Image (tube, rainbow, N blue to C red; front, side, top):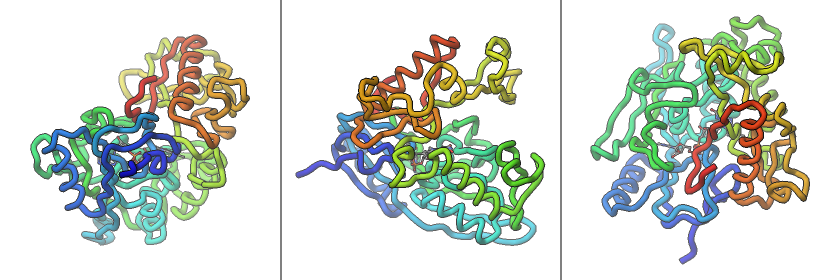
Length: 355
Ligand SMILES: Cc1cc2nc3c(=O)[nH]c(=O)nc-3n(C[C@H](O)[C@H](O)[C@H](O)COP(=O)(O)OP(=O)(O)OC[C@H]3O[C@@H](n4cnc5c(N)ncnc54)[C@H](O)[C@@H]3O)c2cc1C
């Protein structure tokens, strides 16, 4: 029997073989596959779009369940309460955003172009351009592997934070306690977007920050800006063979932020005077410019490098292994720590790997 190579299911195109690989296309299949693996005491890895996972070259020795359920149901639609839409976990996120914008369901347009599935969006509270899914998710229905029962979380029970939620906090090595089955969004009806919170996006739309624009324009501008940074999947562009941002933006006490050079971007982090920094800026200023690692004599032999469009993405140039991506990540993280004394933390889940 030939084993399934996980590199074909990850956007960084790295990852070794799965012990057992199951594609689950319905909610019943998902629950069945998870229960069977759990009953057999098998280690379990859940993947969907594979866009936020870095899987070791040794692969995963247990059962890998790929969530591939599709479709959505509109439960309610009226001008007062908006749209309540229940989306299957494996449904492609960007396709949902496109449908929403075309049908005048407002609120998720700034999240266009983010790869992966809808079921993964609450896991790390997916966000971009001043928006995140915590603003529109009403509830998440899950399979609780500890209690062997369905559990539904309301928005406040999900404990959303910056790239964080209870679903992520209870995941160990890619093995979640709660497997997402469906996600319910509550979206206002209208052709206008949510207020534009991100300065760069407001500028490119020609609106003041905090004002609204047509949602179709917001989606178009976001896709354009993202593509210019290699942040929209494109099989013809090696800069997009990544896990997106490899490091989260560090959140530090005010005195640490103040000690940085004058030009360092600093944003209020919304809690106890903490400050959010730009990981991309820190990486660049520590001497790792766009394309770092491309030289044949470099740390990964040129097989993996920082994107030539953005310093925050580590990309597979064609023949990289997970070990090559990790080598670049270690070099960058150590350099930022040496230069600024700030530790960077990876955003993707590392499976069978450590930095
Ligand atoms: C080019 C590029 C750009 C990106 N830009 C952004 C961005 O702007 N903002 C952002 O937030 N992220 C971004 N990402 C990261 C990624 O797209 C998101 O995190 C996305 O939600 C991951 O979805 P996925 O289906 O690919 O998840 P996977 O990578 O398959 O899985 C990620 C994690 O979620 C878990 N998971 C997946 N499905 C389920 C489920 N049904 N139930 C429970 N756990 C589950 C997995 O076990 C794993 O721990 C980017 C990635 C790439 C490659």
